[in-house]
Length: 338
Image (cartoon, rainbow, N blue to C red):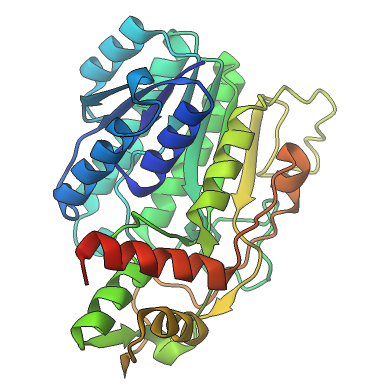
């Protein structure tokens, strides 16, 4: 297939591109290479793709998905079979300071992507949603059929909006769409604004780490390899309209249209303090823990019920926390020579 991967210089985008290339697909990657975090890490990811065995089937273009005209031209020229849409303005806390970035990328950019798929014969759009859509929900584990009407950050609201927008295009234009609610992805080449990266840097530098909600946090940490396997499994199964869908018992995870929503996580929440313990062990250093109150926009716990995705794709998470932290720590030390 010819697959467009948006956000190809990002953490998940890079790894999805590599996996698609490894199995023989042609990949076009786009990214705007913005400076939300260190752009040199993004270019290093692209260099890693260029050095891979499938590099001859990869092409990269610097392009902002908020630029509708440029994106439409790309779709018209390339005639993609399928699209994996991972480009977005990430970060819960950053959304408290820079709301406009989320409107531009996560809303306008997503509409532009939907329009490209609609007008240019794309067979299937798989896109990144987020566990943050569950917002203030207290029932655990989170199930796709739960109500997700109370976001606690603008980032979360933008991701819920993506799900609604995708359904509209599935209903009106018959565009098959699959949304994946990612749960705390970590691993080699990860994002510097996320806890594993922040903790590793501070621990090795002998600096305090900020532990929010006084450490009383649980996260469904999911290793990048398991995420990639789920993304590709979802990409390979195109949702079909369900004529038996019961509109009197509405579900946000399915539809009469060719539309699906799935959680993608490990389904094994971990106490934040236990994660820090595991990272200390692999780095060979103790952390100076600075206990802090809960931050606005954060939630106390995430826990994915992943049974629906497993039934749909046959993919199950395989990488344990111990193994995942070991591989992340080894990459971090090697990449930064520390």
